Image (tube, rainbow, N blue to C red; front, side, top):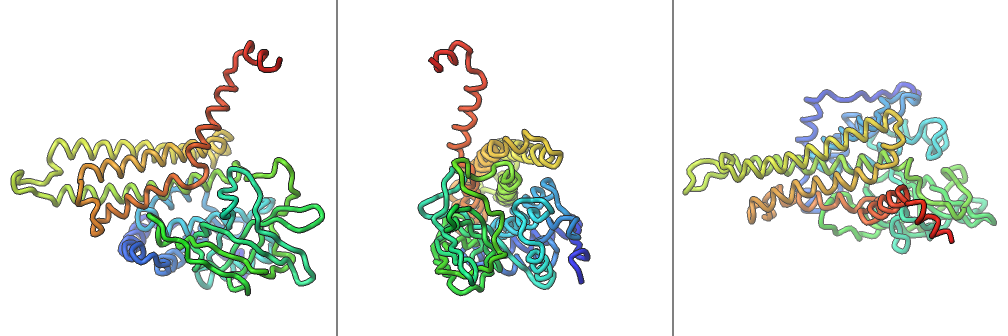
Length: 399
């Protein structure tokens, strides 16, 4: 069967709701144990959602940005760790269209598509490193790829490797040892000799992502597994335009977390009947006002998300250009929404027996994805000041 026969259509909303409930039932267990959510990943595979972004060119449903962010918001409501692992897969498949610089060799992609039909087949690109930090701020990886007759010999260490223990393929970013060095990703089968996973992930939130460090000890990678090699120049850095849809999708799953927190807040308010009050606290003006503030923040976050997603689908340059600004605003809104709920309920919301406690920890992770707020504010401020620079000031600066 060829890759042209692979079709994954969006599931009906009722099926998606059932899937989200299934994820939510296990999310607390995986959070407490920091265990890989294999059951949730299998459920997504069975629903065809791990490959929903396979392009129509390759016989897939070809989810656009709006489709993916809506899916992430739904899955984030169930289990954001599952959503994040799935997002890495969706990113990879969305990048495999003809002419995309991030596409792997066609024969390799066909192999991955065929494997994906049989079982969950997970991939993720690794860029962050202990010394480099996030490459979004510039810099080159310390991971090296040495050319040999056997293939590329890969050595180095990556951090924050989402899904590390459950992946089938890695795409680490490395610098070649050629006379004119290039930077590239390399498609590395997870069962390759010389790969070591260090159990470093012991995080406040998103605990089930198992985002451990991965070390490559002279791992042999076939010559044709190199992806998008680029000669290194002073301008070599992450392409923010290409990364923009992913930036928005990260934000979407945290909207899902905040909606789940809202659900937990609502349940508590309807079920809590203090003796002195004699009726649910949901009926009080205080809690109705709090509920309104939560909803207001989520309306803002979802409106931004959908506006920018539809803009990207339409090819609006500004939607790509300001994706990081949208991410910063959405992160602030969803964190504020959950914070308001936690503050209003007090001690019960901070108990480990409360789902709201887990949602609070998870939503705080919305800020850590690139670009970080300080970088966004500096970029926006620098750009806006330059845009409104008075001619006299410009003349003074040039003299």
